[in-house]
Length: 177
Image 1: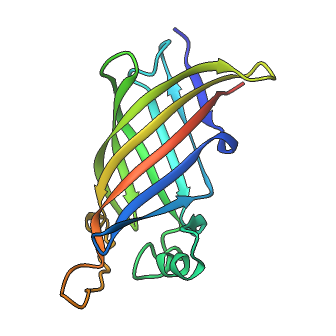
Image 2 (image 1 turned 90 degrees about the horizontal axis):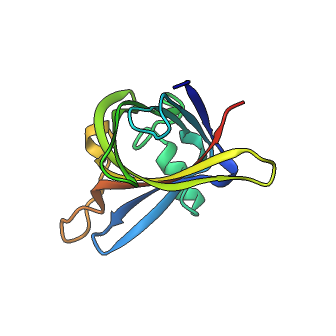
C-alpha cells in the first residue's frame, strides 16, 4: 500500500469546545483558524498519523470581552502560547465507523496524553474531482491539567466554570496531490 497524505479543509471543518458556566448552562466556543492533516498507509485510517494545530488568538465565543479574557494570562495566555497542538500516538479502528484517536495534546506549554473518539463520516469526491473524507472527533479534557486554573466563585461558594471541557471537531480532509 502506498502512503496517502490528507490535509484539513478549513472551509468545511470546524473546531468547537463547550464548558459549563455556573453549573446550569453551557458556553460554546470555536477556534476559527486551524490546520492539520493525516498520513495513512492503508485504505482506511487504522494506524494513521494525525496532527493538528489551533491558533489560540482565533478563539470565538460570540462575546468579545470573554474572548479577550480567554486570550489573557488567566486562561490561554495567547501571546506566550499562540498554538494548541495535537500529535497522534495511535489511531485504532473499533468498528466500521468508529476509531479511538490517542495522542499528545499541548496547551499552554503543558503536554498530556488524551484519548478521543473519531467517528468516520464517509468518503466522497467533490465537484472538482478531489477525494474528501470526514470525521467527527469528540472527547473531554480537564482544563486544570493544562494550566487553565482560573476560576471565580459564585456568591454561594460554587465554581463559576466547570473543569471539564468537551471537544467537538467536524473535520473534512482532502487527499493531498
